Amino acid sequence: MSRSPTPQLSNPSLDNLSSHSAGALYEAFVPEEARRILSKLEFHFTPKHASWLNMVEIEIGVLRGQCLDRRIGERALLETEISAWVQQRNDAKARIHWMFTTAKAREKLKRSYPSVTLVRPAKKPKVKAKAKAAKSG
View (tube, rainbow, N blue to C red):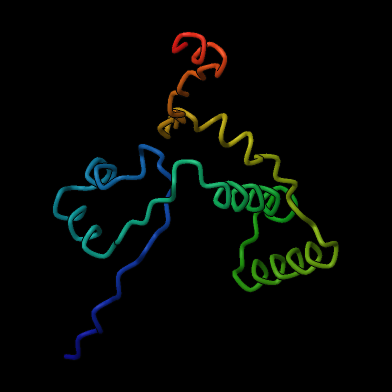
């Protein structure tokens, strides 16, 4: 009896939603099964404010609304439909108008980063030459 090759790890990229954790598997499966599944996963978490992931989610939402808004029962038809949709989006040069600017990011994330206060050395008081000369004379 031949054994199948050992599967490679799956590397899902996840946002930081609290349900995306090993604990969620233990809630859904008995401990032995959760451990078996976890042994095949290596989680990669995106930064908390990962704009690229948000853009992917937006694009998938557009795909769902424009192409996958009905039941497609065969894989070949699904692949054909998605390919046609992708071609149409590319031909139209469809883009996501991302409005999360650097300035907005700095404002939203300012609590996450320490603030920097510049400290300037104290200026020495200027002594007027005439006043100094009068005292010495």
